[in-house]
Every structure is written in C-alpha cells, then in structure tokens.
Length: 200
Image (cartoon, rainbow, N blue to C red; front, side, top):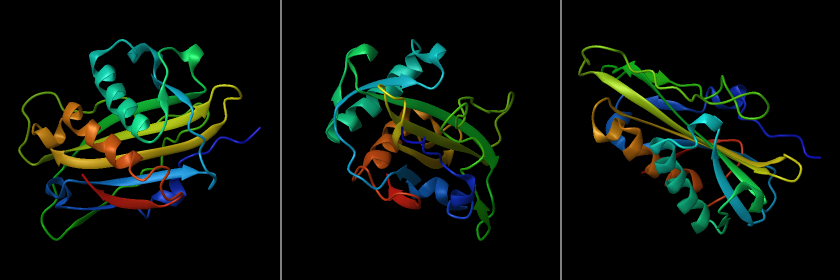
C-alpha cells in the first residue's frame, strides 16, 4: 500500500513568497504533490475535510467548483461516495494579515498543518470582530487531496493560496475559491514538489 503524500513544511516554507502587492496581482501560489506517475482518471466524489460541513451552502459552492475542474481534468463525478473510486477531500481556509508597505515582502510558509493522517490545512475563518481596518488582507487557501477509496492511499494533493483586500471580491471565499480551483487543476497533475505562481 502506498504511503500517503504530505504537503511538507520544509519544502514550502521558502517557496511561497508573496510580495506586498499580491492583493492586486490576481495570482495564486500553487503547490502540488504526486508520485510522478500518470494519475488514472476514474469516478470521483467530492467531500469536505470536516464531514459536518457537507450540507453547508458554502461547501456546496466550493464542491461545485472543484467538481467542475475535476471533470475538465478527465474525472467522472460520482453521485454518491459508494459509487466513487476516488475521494476528493476539500478544505478552504482564510486568515487575515495587515497590509505591508510597498517595498516590503511577506514570506508565507504553507506548511504547518499538512494533508495526510490526522491533519488539515485550515478549516476556520480568522476574521477580526468589530470595525474592519482598510489595510487588512485576506489570505484564502484551497486544499484538495485525491485518495483511492479502496485502500485509502493518496495519489495527488495540492494547495492554492491567494491574497485580496478584506471586504472586496478578491477577499471573499465564495468568489475566490472557484478561481483557486481553476489554478490548482490547471495542467493537471502539474509539477510535483514545488510552488508555482499561477495567474487567476
């Protein structure tokens, strides 16, 4: 049985460097891992990392975007988990940071929480309560893991991250996640083990 792949913090910490103007660049930092072998296209069922989110309107929006990209990549969406050979686990996270002055840089390590066993990449929204400051930046992340249902082995996983002004369309998950899904599955399976900048 193949060992699960993981998004390794060491491989990503130096690779995901977002400039202070990233909120206006409309691009995403995309990292993918796979075994370097063709990923067999088969039936796929999209599920949330947290099962309790399955019935939420937000997850349905995210699942629809990921399902559409998987279909374009050659997979066949399955109407139920029992009818799928592959399970696509989806996780969306958002945090905020203060905008940096022009000329400064921000290094974001996508590591920390990773896919694999007993791990995740976020799942919560960290947005301050109260008055929103105009220089706050929303950092939105989409993570997807493709796993064989028969033996629970991971065949592909990836993460796409982008920034946008908090309160704008570029910082709204419902608007941003479909664009991140497109970036994540573009030229599937994509290069393994490195972070690339993809135009949204």
